[in-house]
Amino acid sequence: ASFFPLGAFVHALFGAWTLSNQSLLPSDWNDMLLPFGEWFLATNTAEYEKTMKEWHLAGTEKEQAEMYWDFLGARMLDLARQGTFIITLVFTYYLAAFIVYQVYSLFLKPFVQPFLDVADEQFRKCLARRTLV
Image 1: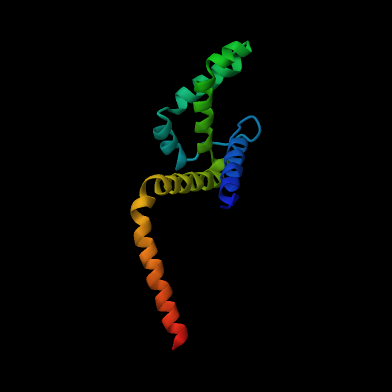
Image 2 (image 1 turned 30 degrees about the horizontal axis):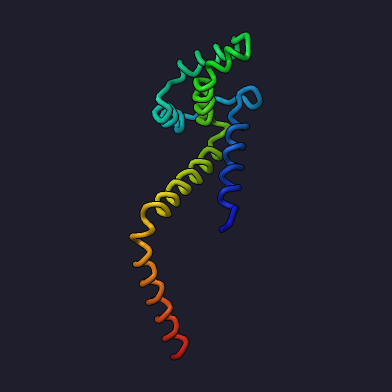
């Protein structure tokens, strides 16, 4: 098995996470990604602004630790920024491919594999006949 898809997925994940950091590379919201991000994360930009403001005003690490999951959700909404449009699409593609592969491997393969084996055998027979002619 090749580790390339996993490496590409992790690379896209870290790239999107870094490029979406507003302290490093500020950018506006992307009009196409923002509605999907708000729907998927069940939040909105007002909640994002509130969470980020509370995070930056938190005085101690303990306060930040208590609100870490809220901060993480807000940071995930940052993936809907203009500066991360392409890398977010790449990340989403790899995430979808990973989910499809896992569903196939864990649930569908026992049912589909016999049909694939028959199709492969017929394809090889067809190729063998063509090389003889």
